[in-house]
Length: 345
Image (cartoon, rainbow, N blue to C red; front, side, top):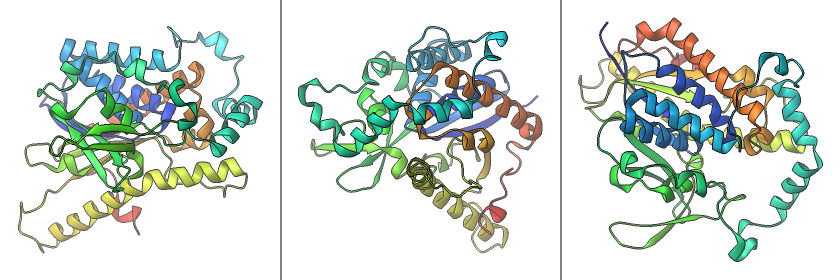
């Protein structure tokens, strides 16, 4: 069977990024699937860096091992596997999410985050993700071999998206991409041209993830988006936490929807013969998502990475990727499987 070449676009969403871990784990089973480039933001940046670090070290097995290690570290446990018999006595993910939201420690920390800032900790502050990200092999992450990595962060001063690639990648870049300003101090990175320090926040505000780095002519036409922020919710949020959660989801999906709208517009121009063939890339868009599961979760499970939820998300990602491959692998390198016209009608 001919090799299918694709690009990946990995969204951010805190601990819900474990869903992307599951997707990547399943895609690694496909020997005839080649990932040429990855654009990642926040948790998507963590997944992308872990994937690349392991893949350069030891191919598919190395990528899987490093992703497993990453999420074991995030969950603060050495083993996320739960025997089936034990899972029967555990609450559902929705119940776990609600329990965390209603717990006194979570409500206290949530209230505190609205009254103070990460800078209040002074010399006692340390980014809680730093000890994990520092252990990645950035010699491998910056390696020019496939897949290319493009990591998104938001410039605090200008409000513009910044995409770091190649030799620009570092521990600070990954931390910047995942820097929620209510939780972490802005990450300062020197501009290579001016030497000036620029402060960065989470890339989700301006590119979650940015798709435009994947439009280069030497890259495949196909972009598979792993979406972990629900595009739609049926119920109108009414509690303070539900409202804040939905505001965050809309904000973090806005940049992606703008780029998808632009892709849709270009495709219509190409189909109508309004622009010269080859003048602009005719992108094939695909999406792996589980909005049903994500609608049952909340910002609480994004911020509190419990091993049970992480494992549930991983298994959901594996299942969704398996279904996507069964339904659409034949369409890769042939056509889009996301109906952009309906999406924006």
